[in-house]
Image (cartoon, rainbow, N blue to C red; front, side, top):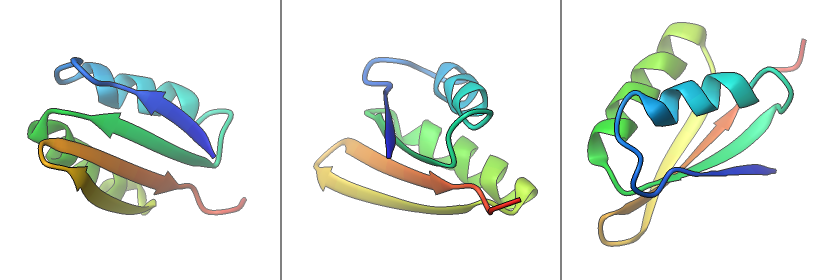
Length: 71
């Protein structure tokens, strides 16, 4: 699984990084420390019917896993 470290990045940078990496990777874990990123990526995945999950392993740090459907 490809991992994107977005700690310290604010919107829309994490979403832009995710969009870029989805072109070449089907499973991505994005790590962020901004809760607004969770909302923007949730909306993006919902619109594109991508499977996703969000975990908060450390208070204030989220791991967002996005899986693109096989073509």
